[in-house]
Image 1 (cartoon, rainbow, N blue to C red):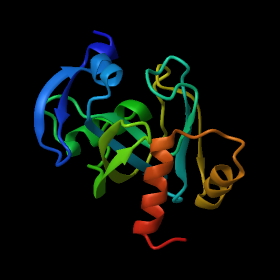
Image 2: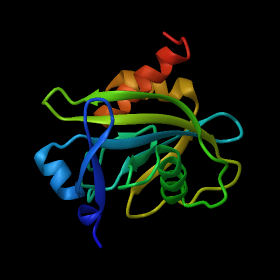
Image 3: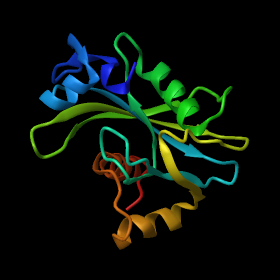
Image 4: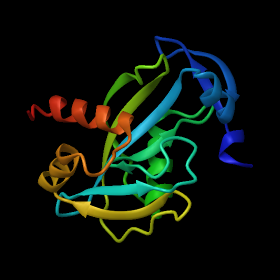
Length: 173
């Protein structure tokens, strides 16, 4: 099954399930769905940053400071956060990511999705999925902030929104 055939819950403005649809249809029709964003840190506190592969359905070849993805039909945010973190980082046995907050992302073009933000510590080596990740590194928060601010790297817009909200949630200006 391709990722476009994965079944997702379609939700309303209050994050209540109102139906189900194939992922490809959800994207094509701009249906509201659920996503998770996992802020993955190594033992030194550095953040996992990566460039998405060019074959991704959404935001191909852009940089991201979160791992994550869509929440499958009937799946909880918590379960999706753990699944996505382990898949994208290429590890198993991660601690359950800690839920931080949730927000409704709006892309400015009438497409919205509910977004739950988590944090997880990655104790060992990572082996990211080659289908998902073209390049990666663990960057200090200062290095990441510089990359976001300098505009040389193009980051996924929903990740930038989650990053901005995370900084505000932590009280960082």
